[in-house]
Every structure is written in structure tokens, then in C-alpha cells.
Length: 322
Image 1 (cartoon, one colour):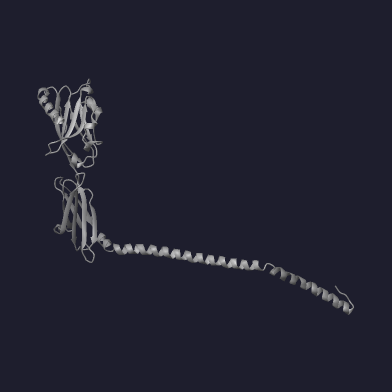
Image 2: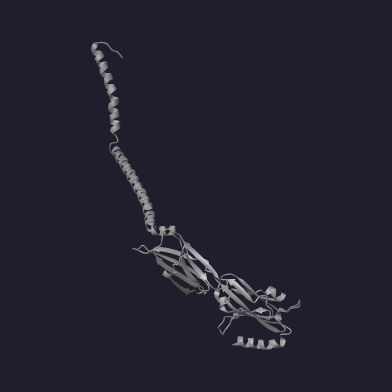
């Protein structure tokens, strides 16, 4: 209420001081794309002795058909008043203070939304009061179209889907490469997003010709602009056999992994059995530690016995030979 009364009071005062203080705009219409930045400007009389402490700048936005306005930015008596800024513009709208001493009240809005579109009221007071209106239009072309193709289970028909976001609302047309319309089979729906964009989805179901290509066209009448997406026959074939390919891609790596694990298990068992056999032989040797020593003694004792028997035989014969 205070805001409206202030505006009305300033409008009444305007007629008395308009001859001494006039606000001009170098551009009355700004057209920008969604997500970009925009700077809108109002100009006022100034000189080198401009006192910012006496300057007031108010930017407000008003949409067509709405009684209330949104305070975009307020600069009064050399200071900004962020507490009165509408929540839609917090962190996105600012006044370029460095340009004020040049007689330029420039409002900058970053990451423009669809809801930013409308009429902007620029009011400046400095030893007089004047204001101007500036129009901001925001467009959002349907730049990216998401496509999907699915085969209906148990049928020879395919379901084609195209989806995109933009503004204003677009029409969707379907056609083949011979420009024959398929729109009669289409079901197109839309919904508004939180940012004010139209989320448009179009679905068409039919039996395609595998040798043809198909496309969906998003036509934005107000922007006089169209965007299209094409679906090739190769994409249809890949969709048809995607289930088999996926199964093969799953089975082959699985078989390889199983074979590797099986081989590793066999090798592990063989090594384990070899170790067990060696340990058994070791235990047998430990149970008969004197077996080799006894054999050695028997073997070593045989030459001695043979030598003694030879000496005895020689004595009996009457001669001794060594």
C-alpha cells in the first residue's frame, strides 16, 4: 500500500517538475533468451557535482493483468534497500552503482527466467522526478529434443517419443523422409515447469518402414522458429535387437569369468595335493631316521669281512699275500 501511494504521489509531482527533470530510455523493448543476462537502462540529467545522497532510483516489475508489482531494486539517498527486494530477484538483480554518476541507472538481471518477462517501471528522483516503462520479453527456443524408440511387446509396431522444453507453447509435427505427415497418430501433451517453461511430450505409434527415416518438428509460432530431431532406420534396428545384444554382452563376460575361476580352482587343488604328498613322505622319513645309517654300516662292514677271510685262507695255505 505504501508503495502504491508513493508512486501516485510521485506521478502527481511529475507534472510540476517534468520541465526541469526528464528520464529517457535508449531502448524500450528488450528481447532475451531464457538463462541469459540482460541490462536495462534509464538515463537522467546529471553533472559533475551529482550528489548520490540525494538520488533515488526505483525499479519495479509488473506483469500484464496483475494489480500488484514486484520490487526489483531500490536505491534511495545513496544506499540500497535489499530488505524490500522481491524474493524472485534476490541474488539476481542489481543496480550498477558505478554508472550512476554518469547519469545512467542500469539494472542488471542474471539467469533470466520466463517469469521475468513483463513491464519494468524505472523511476528516478533528483531535484525532480520522472519515470519511464521498459518491456522485457523472454524467449526459450526448443533447442534440445530428447528422442526414444521402443518396440511394443509382441507386436511389430514401434513407439516413438520426442520431448523438449521451451516457451511459448510449441506444436509438434511428425513426418517421414518424404515429408508425409504422421501427426494423425500422435498424442501430444504438455505441462508447466516451476521456471515457467512448457515441457512438451509427443508420442506416436505405428509400424515403420525400416528403410525410411522419421523426424519430429517442434514449431514455435510466436518465435517463428522450428527445431527438429531425426530418427534413423539403423536406430530402429538396434532397438529391435537390443535385447539380444544385451543378453550376449552379459553371457560372454560371465562365461569368461567362470572359466578363469574354474581354472584357478583346479590349479589351487593340484598345488595343495602336491604339498600334501610331500609332507607325507617327509613324515615317513622322520619315522625311520636310522634306516639309511644301518644300510651304510652293513655296506661298510662287508669289505672288512672279505679282507679277513682272505688272510685266513692264505695262512692255511702257508703263504700270506697282501
